[in-house]
Length: 347
Ligand code: UDP
Ligand code: MG
Image (tube, rainbow, N blue to C red; front, side, top):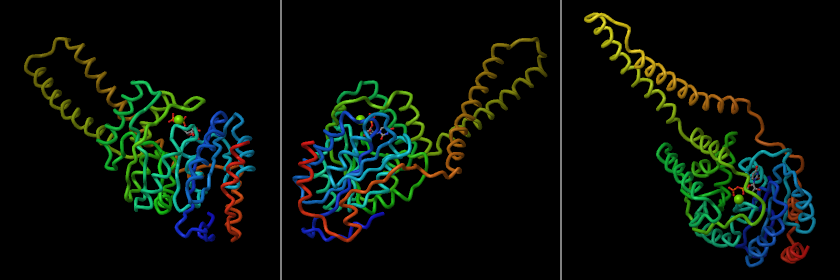
């Protein structure tokens, strides 16, 4: 990791802000995203470092990023060896961020970069984590809103870690919060949960979540369902407990019922009867057993994946920004950094 404190910026209160932006097939939005991000930092005294993580895109994303990096010396480029998914792409970016504060943001412009100055203000006021909380979810169907809300309610009931509602990954984190987060190297990365687990003083900033600027969301209902299972299994073992209690309860009931049947047979004999009730009991027990096995399986599968201890991701290339290279060499950053951005915008 690069040392951020090698430089002495002109303004002693100026900080290095890293922006981590994962990109998967975002050729349509990347230039517009970078332009808006630059415009925001033009109005700030703080130094900027943008870490783009190419998450195995199959379109022109990587070529575009290379071009952008040539034009803007503040761009660091991480090219993952394949598509690892957003949570891992974000982690790769955080691993390489050297800022005093780090902002995680989507590149599809659903997270407005204009919120960053307010986040920085709250961070400087002493909050370690400043997360953006949606007030409106544009371009999302009511089904998605309803399922999202149900998910938050379930996980809130089941888990001891409080995960704030309507909060995505868009947030600013202090150096110490990121360092803490990076110590969690689990493979099943339910980021919302990990962010909350880390703790530290946290505060929300409300914002309107816009619809995607261009391109398509990479989510569908099957992925969202799996995401929900991921969230629940990585943050609570309550489903395992439910399975055990269900088993216990049903066995007690079964014993009582067995006693009753034995008594009845002894007293009154048994004409062959009761086929329907037998079927019902057998099927119900079978179903519950399979469901419980499934729940155990979900946890077991995750344990299996964690025990393999594979690296979280592999990179094809890590190209540090030219500013980062200068900082590492102990040189100062030219104050013309802003001009670079203007050029990048024109391109
Ligand atoms: N993303 C990624 N890898 C993936 C899927 C998405 O890096 O496998 C990035 C994507 O480029 C975008 C962000 O994660 O910057 C959010 O993705 P998307 O818009 O598809 O998710 P949504 O906003 O619908 O939650
Ligand atoms: Mg999006």
